[in-house]
Amino acid sequence: MEPSGKSKSMIYFHFAIHGLHHKVPFDSRRLVFPPFPAAIITFTIYKLTSLFFCDSTHLLVIAGGLLGYVVYDMIHFYLHHGAPDENSYFYHLKRYHNQHHFAHHNSGFGISSVFWDKIFGTALHLRKLAKSIKW
Image (cartoon, rainbow, N blue to C red; front, side, top):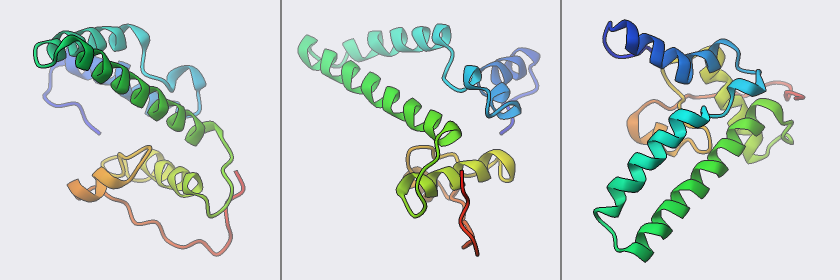
């Protein structure tokens, strides 16, 4: 995936946030979103959602969003470093995600699900393997 525009700062930002992960996909230190930008994004979302929800609902929305993101990141980590059983949901996701990393950088963006790839037309079609992969 290419950064939008030709701005050097945008190219650097894209590489620092996501490109480095594609350059070294099995480096566990580069797998999770960097904490400092995550804190800025979280604070911004926190402030924006406080404009639309009452206090109790606002905290539930933020807690749900953070929990969802942690689960997403755990799945992403597992897809890079785990060894899912053949024919399991995660086996399929690991194959799918590896195709995104090593063959089709401009499609197959789904990590915890292929749902949005199907909606946006970026889904990958995995061929049937004669022999299963042993992770």
